[in-house]
Amino acid sequence: MRELVVENQEILMIPQNFKFANRGKVTAVRAGDFTLELEYEPEGVLIDTYCEFYTQTSHGKLYFDSYAKEINGKTLIIASPAKHKFLQRRQYTRIKYMNELELLMDGNCYKISTLDISAGGMKLKTNENLNIEGSYNVTLPLSDTVSLNCTFQPIRIEKRSEGGYTVSGQFVYESSHDKMVLTQFCAKRSVEIKNK
Image (cartoon, rainbow, N blue to C red; front, top):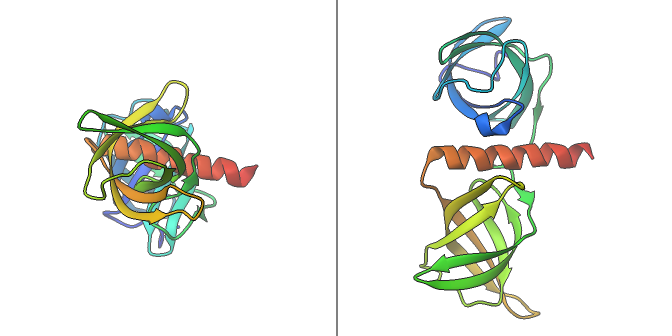
């Protein structure tokens, strides 16, 4: 594990209640644990209670379970995990995401059917003529109680042989917390799908 977690590495930490997802930087690595300096107060994090951790390494996206041995303000001592796994090599975990949603721009509403999603962006199909230069507001439902508002910017628009368009694009966020929530949502769903 020591060669996988290194100083100055950014790590996403998700306690059992993912509303308290937090991001931090590794400040020290030892044989049995490492020190994590969090961006926000560690709400929802308890000593000796397992959390999920995600980080990007040169080998791909790393996932492991571990727990805080000590909590001192935003500084946590995290036990070295017994095992870990790599989720995939792309920067953001992409998952299937089927929803009927609306894109909004300049008072106009465009109906879309989403196909897949990641913290980087989404792919959708639509019969609407979207402007590739446009920035569209979209609300993404993540659960019965959690929705995320962000901006969608098309990057590629392809005509479908059966009519309509397939559109791929990127998200622009108002806050890094929103991006963190979507990163965590996709990673968690990816693990759930793999374990089915």
